[in-house]
Image 1 (cartoon, rainbow, N blue to C red):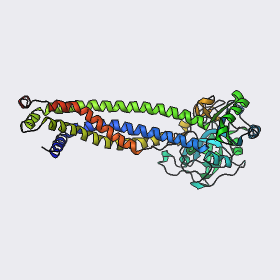
Image 2: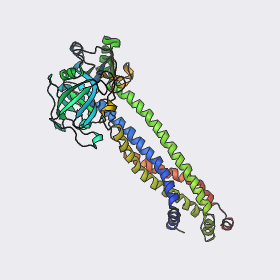
Image 3: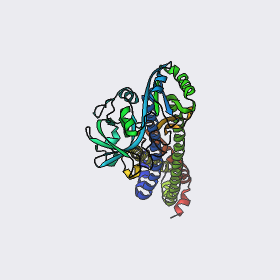
Image 4: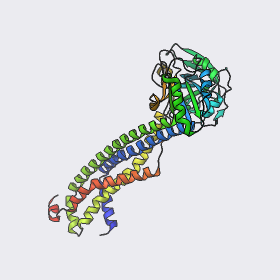
Length: 444
């Protein structure tokens, strides 16, 4: 008796009981797919957050208005006059619905200078189409990639450079104000979690003041001279504004989000572990049934010279085959699920106006916020609403990310599936190997 014979007998029984084998493999597929999908999604979100924050740079400080008045040019000049500050970029953030042709998208409106837009995008602006707007009072827009290529249109382009779009601000389904803006440029896909670049409409500050009907800013992006002065500069700004502003650094945001992602990852790991435990119990149960059904066959095999170890290996190889096939298929299913989740979660803002607009005035006070500097995490509203969710306006931010599949995760997923299957098959295999030939032959 050689290994080839053992493998053949293992495969033969699995092939004869195809439905039962398929159902057993499905149990493993579900567990492995859960591991791959949850791991790749959390890794992708974590990478997206890190990229968004790193694009701002380690010396950036976000100052968000806590009141209804916001900031003015005088506040910008005041901060620029402080020591260890190289530049201050004012931002005016709001939300609305952009209509273009037969499509409409819930969008984040960000008023920022051309130089400020470069800073938001990591120091360099490249365009999919078109060019940047001018810093004038005339409304003109640069739109994010998802706005021009919404998932609701199957990724086809619905907005072109030179086309005139209509921005609707507030007022629910029937009220609010509208303004026509020409589209000067379309950005390539950037992803992003903290700043929803792909679902945003950028325009000059004077134009945003007209569109959003607000003469003040709700954000200031401050850049310290070097990383060693970031914390002291943030503390100084906090002292100046007190409760009138929320001050946080990108390092604080990164630390907070990393902690949250770590907790979510742990929770997902536990869920995936439970899925594999259920799969292991299912494998053990089905293999015990297989041992019972093959009792007579086991007796025959032992009577013709099969040793206990041969019987043991037959059933262990069956478990190994189930684990390997389930692991490979689980990776494929998990990868597909990951991309499906990234599409659903990061699909952007193309939805119907009836579901994206809301009652009341449009919010123009979205802001960054950090738990370490008097806030929560991410963009939030101040002064009665939120550009990115909550308050009186609709949510326009999307979680834009791409799943990450490290080779170590793929290899580990297959190995875990095989190990779990072997462990689950050990008791049935041991029980089969310990059968007495005479007792086994008596059972038909």
